[in-house]
Length: 248
Image 1: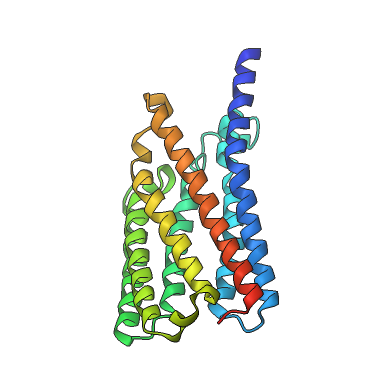
Image 2 (image 1 turned 45 degrees about the vertical axis):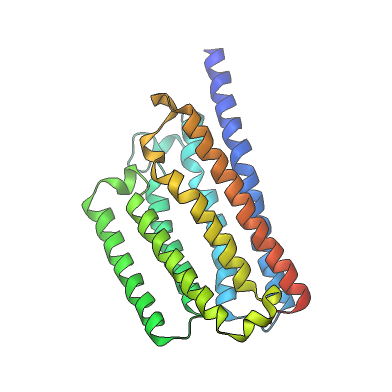
């Protein structure tokens, strides 16, 4: 019994060792963004929304820890969720993922001036919301799994919006001073993050440590950790550079 308690404690400790660096770097990015907003009063209103989104993401991440903490503690913590439909936090992240992709696409859409591309993105966003909700309603993924439909279609839509954003950037005056253009840092950070994480996440539901796939589980965890650290560090770097030189 004592050895089992030690094992549970070790698993919970390992989870916290993995999660805490992500929480810390997310907090630093949100704080850096807030400092940027204070130092650059002329910031774009969508950049302000992006900083608010960073704080919202941190809040969701903290709330979502209830499930792994309960599981790794054998429900000594949050015992009231044991045996309920919310025993996993998949429902929370399925809702968050829809909000996340819609917001990020809208963010990059705000910089696209060509009317056709702008309207196209708006139509695709509406279709994404509709089909994502239908996917959650008419399948059993909402409480059990993280919807791979939302992750995959959301990533494709996001990549498409970033590509249109880059084309718009090439035609604008911002190309003359990219170092001071904060949305470029955001685009690069987000694009590289999802190019690294999405391919691995698609298969994550089919591999588990209990099924003899510990190597894949460890790989997935490390990719998530390092990708988060890179993305938020790059965002922090962008906030610092642009707050010192005044956004162009």
